[in-house]
Length: 382
Ligand SMILES: [Fe+2]
Ligand SMILES: [Fe+2]
Picture 1: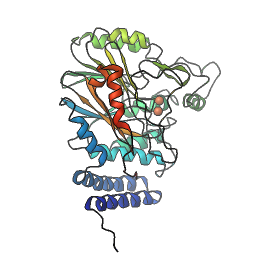
Picture 2: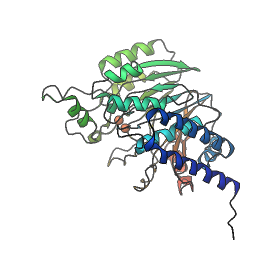
Picture 3: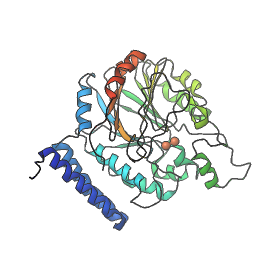
Picture 4: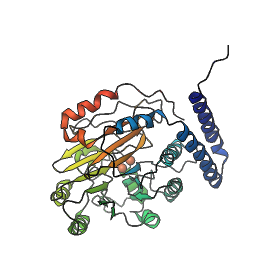
């Protein structure tokens, strides 16, 4: 007897088959053809998501019902770690998947933050492939730099492609600041390390030669000047690659001059830091500042053995046989009061929304958040 397939299920299967064909074709394509085909695949994805919103998006809508109506939304994609290993590499696929997902949002976010670590080893080929992938995004992109983009040529290529890494902008009443928070003291000149030796050392999680990340004096001075013209009641959102606090020093989940930066931010009533680098769900609050980590599209890091902020509801350990598990992208709803509600769109799992109300209620709020996180979404990855 023929098995009856529900229309939603059939549509899902057609979509997954289309994606399968797309990825099967990848090794045969030139780079130009790849982007042409990718655009076609994205159009299929958009039509699919519009007609039949995936489970994760439906859940987000349910979660949003409990949130205050956002003033505006921005999305993020981060830590893609693109390698120069061909278009069929899984990190390219993952970045493309995030771009497709964000392009399928309706309405579109006001802009997309790219959180840094676009490349794995800072090579021009990696950065340029990453840029071509991000260029497909419909919404404007705000770029941030990570250490993997920086330490081959100390930012030369990145600057040429994306401009200065430190800047600010105002959007709908919120003052946004983007920092280069992956500055470290020079440990390469004296031992005469080559640029690639320096890069490879920085790319290690527990770099034995590494120095802690910092914002540095020059940027702190810039920050003071930038904020001098901003009213203390204006909500501030800071984009930083390294967490702007001290989480775990041996893995450089750390910002050495965090306290000095916090002092500059102390007079402001509402401050949110969105940081990358840690590739995991993270929530922290220190006085007037709320900190949110972002997901990577490439891989999830495990939680550090100590120093995990108390407010963090930890994501379950990723399935090592599923390349997308524990990875994803996300978005941030800026509320009318200037606080942020943070969405994690975890591929193959229930999404997670950390609202400011959860954070404000402290450990109790986070315990409530942790309850519905049991179980996984029955939704295959492509
Ligand atoms: Fe990263
Ligand atoms: Fe990083």
